[in-house]
Amino acid sequence: MHFAKFVPEITGFRGRLVQFAKIPPLLILLAACSSPVSSTGSQRTKTPESVNAQRLITMARPPILAAEDASDIETVRRLISRLTPSELLDRNGARLVDASELPWISGSQTGRAFLESRGNRILVRGKPAERCPIAFADAAPKTTPLGDLARTSLTRCLQMANPGCGCEVVAFNSALAVPRENISYATGIAARLRARSLGVDSLLVAEELPDGAVLLRDLSKTIGTVRVSSDNIVEIKLTDVDGVFTGTARDVGFRRGRKAQRIYARNDRGERVSLLIGFDPDELAEFAGAWLAWPPDA
Image 1: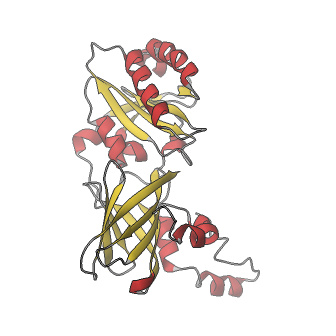
Image 2 (image 1 turned 120 degrees about the horizontal axis):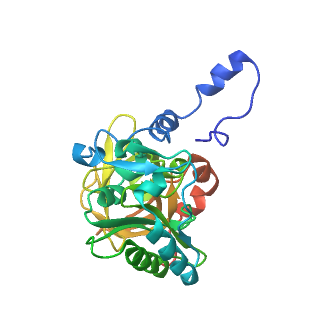
Image 3 (image 1 turned 60 degrees about the vertical axis):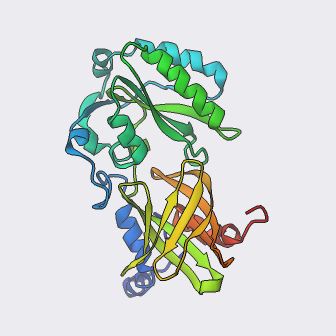
């Protein structure tokens, strides 16, 4: 978490105390919520023990299972077909860890879907994740070769991807296929809410609930909830406002395992809400003004 946009550089011990006091308390809270070494999910998102008890192989240098375009898929299929647990465990730095030690795998809905799958299973994500907002788990019976499953999943991922995006295998069966530092997961992320007609313009914390909804809160109370469907239709319910705001979410990419989205919605009275979820505070400081403006095509 970078506070450079909010705290000027200063010298002197007394000055540091004064300037630190100016850091918005919500940003301090977000820094605590978004540590990449935090374990799985928040207190609101409990993962079943049977899921967390699974063990996955992690490697210092995992095999590269990524496709920049369709021409790479066959290479990935052949490579993943040859990888066995015994061969992976023989690699330098390989070890078995509990799923609870892998934050995005055990803390996100997508990761939990992978852990709860049976048979051959695979978890894929857009690459680079910061601007390629795709992630899903696939599974097939053990009779389906893992290589065939990888080919199907990567093909689907590339078809869904934005121009300039590739896709990578994050995990398969009982192995993690990316470095552990690539699967951090923020339990609380920044959200910026603006509704001019309601007199609202606030920096909030967004927490994912077990059912996939997102809870918006400030330091003292719940502000509202956000639900996004699989086709990015949004419903926002604000605590002190009657009715529901409906609109669409525009996926941007992932930040510390959480999807960054620009959301625009309105209620039956035509009152508008702009909501940014998942962006780093330094991004918000630089771009929030433009992103919160109501787009012509919303």
